[in-house]
Image (tube, rainbow, N blue to C red):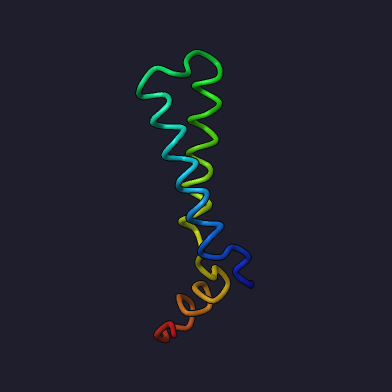
Length: 68
C-alpha cells in the first residue's frame, strides 16, 4: 500500500482540526454545527496520524521479522 498523504496535506488537516476545536472551545460555534465540526476535526486528526503501511506491518507481525 502506498502512502497517499504528504507532509503538507497532513499539516493542513491538523491545522484545520485545531481551528475547529478552538472555535468550539471559544463558543463561536455551537449546537449541530459544533458536533459536526468536532467529528470532522476528529476524522482529520485520525487520518493525519494513520500513515503506516498496514500490509507490511501485518507481514512483519506474522513472520516475526524486524520492520524496515
